[in-house]
Length: 309
Image (cartoon, helix red, strand yellow):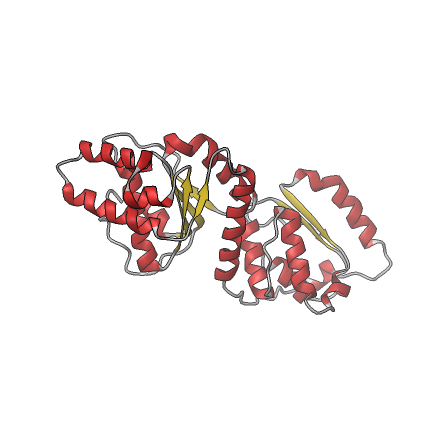
């Protein structure tokens, strides 16, 4: 069987009085001129290839422009908020507005925040020193009439510098390995935050999926898989499902195998109900070929595909 899964203007913007829906796995905050076309481009591509739904602003704001309420809404609706602090981050009032909003959301909605100190040290951010401090001083000269706002931003920088984060040192760290570490960190958080799935049993499907043994279903499926798998963004052939499902932890093993084959990375799922939602969330935006061989119970399809909504 082949399945296609899924086809505010300032930092004072008030927070919603309810917990917002989580439409994005990750929100990326960064200074465009420092990292957009290198580190962020590579990170964003790797996140999307791993099935992680990412929100990244596609515009570098210039002087006189305002951050849209849509951007602040995206922050509220993201599970994990990543702040890439680079040498010129504090030169941008819009980056600092984002930072202020992110820290507000962390307190109000209990979102996870990951600071990445890109070619700078946490102490540079905390004490506004080095090239990072020079950028903040430059911003201060441009808006010297608003001392109170500068104090708010300074407090936000001190707060984010105290959070547990990751440091990247140019010419010292392997960027691809560093990005894979970030993805592993994100995956572990998403798995822990994924809710259990409520079972939905498909009706009238038995006649379309089950057939007598020995009629060549596996051979036909393998041949079809080989012919068309290259037409999809990801593919997986799960064989011996009946036999594996009967073993302890068999369905969990099948779920993990499915995710690894399609995403190319392990999510280390330990619960079948969470695994159902992980499959749905991570593959919903991908055109995927999934073949399930030797299925003999509907629950096996449910745990590996769900309701495909």
